[in-house]
Picture 1 (cartoon, rainbow, N blue to C red):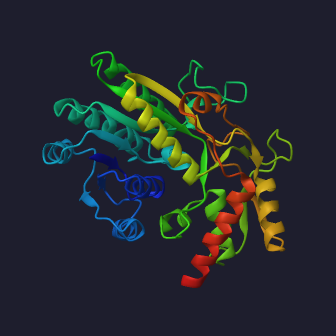
Picture 2 (tube, rainbow, N blue to C red; picture 1 turned 30 degrees about the vertical axis):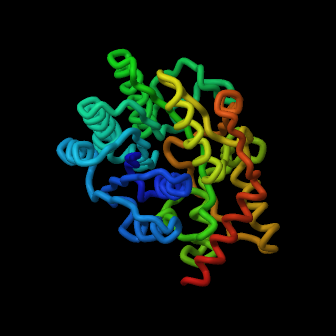
Picture 3 (cartoon, rainbow, N blue to C red; picture 1 turned 180 degrees about the vertical axis):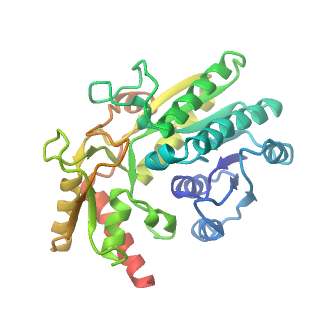
Length: 334
């Protein structure tokens, strides 16, 4: 059985569905702070399979120990954690508590119950802003500036440190760039619409939940002044998880892979693609930059290509079309 922490959230729920599709038995633990029971119902509906679920918090070691003692867990996919850069500046202690202490608790329980395989959800933010592009996994990293990124890099280092005491341990660290898109059913992760990130904001704007589309900064040192990001479709991202899992089952040690498209697109370029497909102009409002946002970044994905035989299949046009299909489903249900 595979334990999926944070399995009701955006990335976790998509991964849960794909694991079930691949005939894996899973157990989800989630505190539902960024999701609800509907996520579990939708995972069951899409997969047509039963899903074991524990409503619990990974910062509670007793909950985790009960989870491991009562179930035959052989691997962990660790998604649980807080994930907003701007929020982490306002409440850094909660980020270190959930993301770092939660990971320590998880390792302690895995050690206690002899579970030696973990796929860890990390972030491209661990690279900070001091390195030439594209970012590669073998960079020697300084501690990044924002608390969210710090919590992810600290968790990575804790996992690597534990490996020195347990040679049977196998770790896959996946550094995400910008996952977008949705499962074809349109049923996974309604909560994403509350985010201030670009794609959720576009969907909220199209649904008329907001009156204008916010653009956070147009004076970056980039090709058009807006922030440049590396976008990857959620299904391609999850395929990377499954390939990392198979790799770490066969190889002991700690392995780090970037999961992105390997290309950078600006905010204005993404907006233009939506406008072209919809044949409409968006009402844009340029707002101040958000604290912690970088001007531009994208991934070097050659290591994942080489070691995992993983290649993202969906280009930016496919991603935008998928998001618009999700929007149509949302519009019909509104």
